[in-house]
Length: 61
Image (cartoon, rainbow, N blue to C red; front, side, top):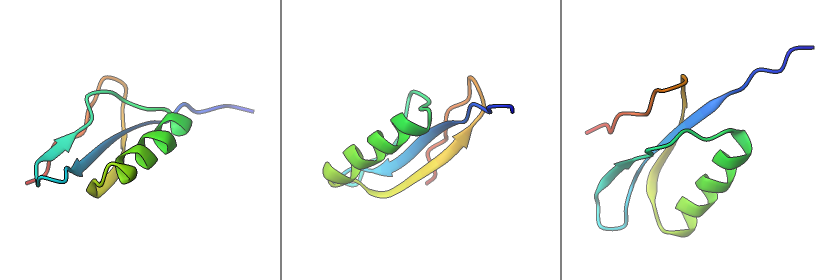
């Protein structure tokens, strides 16, 4: 059985309307936690994006 490591990054919009992108990649458990933190902080348009090692998500305008 092979285990595949998956990494995720996030993009979101802060309460003040500023678009943001994560500066780190998260494993699945950490991504679940971060997504909840963003929701609790009032972030909108939150997107979890799969990323390759060393890759970070781009902010979409």
